[in-house]
Structures are given as structure tokens and as C-alpha cells.
Length: 465
Figure 1 (cartoon, rainbow, N blue to C red):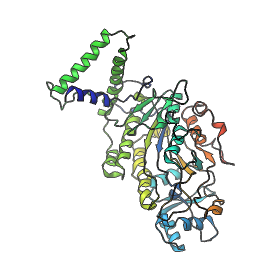
Figure 2: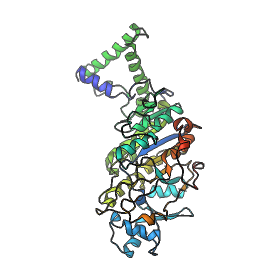
Figure 3: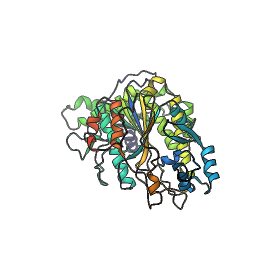
Figure 4: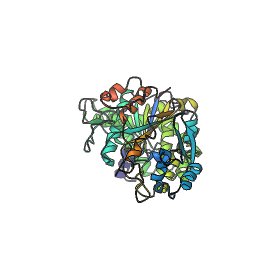
């Protein structure tokens, strides 16, 4: 390895993201044991592309042709790859969905989602219906609105902060980006300009097993060029730290190098004694249809066992390609199974976590918009507006929040581009999550929430136990 490539590798391995100060460091101890999650933590999973939750949750089949439970199946038969017949609707409902109720709604959960059904049965799944953010049906714009948690975000407001970054800042901890590139959700608040952001509470953990600066490992001979360059660079920074005044502008580089080592080395040491659980490794090796999401689950597991070091309060994950204009059944059911199936991503993660950690973690899953009420001519569904949002965790008061299948939708079912009406804005849901993570933080994260809306007759104040 030549000097230029060495420097590139050293910089690329750094976990601290961008400028504006350094993230909050936790207890930089060399303890080998995994740390319990002692602080309430949000895990946000962005399902970009517009996931169709009406495919995940369906109304019970009803033979009455005037009922919602009949007209839904009739309008969406092609998206479920079934024929237009009473027998086909009924068979699909009976054979492919778990039948559940909340007392007011009889509905189905896709039977490939066994873990989600189990969590529902335990009372740990909240389905917030008719949720909405952006109304443009434009992927990029509505993603920004959702991730910023800001209904005023325009299509070109890329530099604003995200609600996850604002929450981490309010909770005096860090947001860990477990994706290839940090999402806007992770960007923290700028100290004086609301149109800009600051990343001082953001840690990039694209590969949690490579968080420290490059060092020569046992695979490098002590007298090799790589080992020599490593020692020389460490000695160089150590010498410069003694020579330069802390007031020097160049001392910033010395401080950053030291911080990177102090941050990365304890993580590396901790994880060397804690192998990736076999079940989680299997997710990255064919256990999921999306290997990349398996890698994020590994990153999340590692972030949790190192939460005392990284000051974890918010984690950011993503799962894409939900834009199901064509052949929807084949396009999205494997994705739902990846997320919610028995032995799949979230089930496997939960099985590896102790109860106290589960109790201190809440999952939020949603996409930038929903799909239209009626299937299109390509066996799929087109862009809609309203959708459902899922809040999952042991601390969640499970149930359905909002009108799951509004009868008023039947009146517009034959209208062109009819979709779910948005009645509860994203920020109202997120605000309750923020207050659970850190008391009264929603006032800082969403100062304008009083101007947004909640569906009539719905209270989100009891979303958590």
C-alpha cells in the first residue's frame, strides 16, 4: 500500500461525519461485554418508494357486494394476482392472511409476516392510519418532507435538518447512520439558521466492523511497508500534538485524528470480543432477499452492544424499491417478509437482544406516501398520498389509530387517481415518539406541531404505555 492509498483508507474508515464539531462520546471504556441499551432509543426504517400498506393490511372479505370488504378485493384483485371472482377474493383472504381484530376492525396481516403478527398479538404494534406528509406524489419531495418532519419543506430544501438529527441533539446523544449514505433524517439543527443543518451529532456506521482508523493488523508483517507507514503516521501526529499550539488552525487536524482513534478503537476492541451472531450473519448471506438490509441489521446490533460508547439515541436504516406500479404481489411481498417474517430481519434482531434492550427500543417504519385505492392495468398500484405508519416496540400501546378502511373511500373508488385521504400529519406521530425517547423533546424537534393535524376522534397521546 503506497502512502496516498494509505491516507485514503485512513480517512474513509473514519466514522465521524462532516463538520460542525464532534459527536457526543460515551463511556470510552475497553469493556469486552455487550452493553445493555440503558437509554430509550429510536430505530427509524425509511421504506422509500411508497410502500402499499393496504397490501400488508387488508379488510376481511365480505360477500356483500356493497361492503368495503367486497369492493376492496374487487378493486385490487389484479394487484393480488387473482381473478375477478368471489371465490378468488375469498380464497386469497383465507389462505394468505392472518385474521386479526382490534375490536373495531377485522383485518388481515400478510401471512408471510409472522413476526409482525406475533408482535400484534402481544399488543406491541400501533398502526397509525391515514398518515400524510407531502401531497405532491413526487418521491424526492415527499421523502424530504418525511425525513425533515417539516410540512413546509420544498422540493429543493436539501439543506434543512432532519427530525432524527434534531431528536438526537435534544436528547444529548448521537444519531447513527447505518446506511451507505446518511439520509436527511440524520442531519442535526444548525445553531442559528433553520435552512441549514449541522452534523455534530451524526456518526456514520456504514460498516460497524470497520469504525476505527486504519492500522496494520496481524496479516501485515511488522517490517512491511503498510506497518511502517502506519507507525510513521501515528508517530507524526503524536509529535505534532506536542509541537503545535492548541490555538493553531492546524491543531484541528491533530484533534480530529486523536478523536477518531479514541472513538474507533474502543468500538473495535469491544466488537473483537463479540462476534456477529450466526443468525444475523445468515441475513447477509442469503437469509434475506435484500442483503444490504441484512448488513444494516448487523450494524444496528453492533451499535446497540456499543451504545455506551457511541451514545446511541437514534438509528437510521433504509429499505427501498417499494414503487410497485407493476406486478405488485411479486414486487413487494418478499420485502414485507424480509422485514416482518418469522426468522427474518426484525425477528432475528429481537431474538438476539435481551429484554431490557427491547424495552428501551422503538421501531418506526413508513414511506414517503401510499398507493392509490384501485389497482392499475399492470397489476400494480400508482402513487397515492395517505398511508399507514407502524410504531413497534414493547413500550407501544398497540392498536389501530384512525379509520382503517373509511367507508367514504367507496364513493371515490371509481374516480381517476383516487387515494387514501391524509388526515394525520407525520409530525404529530413523530412528536409522540420523540417525547417517549426524551421527555418534552418534541417541543424542540417540532416547534410548529400545533399547526398540523390529527384525524378527528383520534388521540395519539396514549401511543406509549
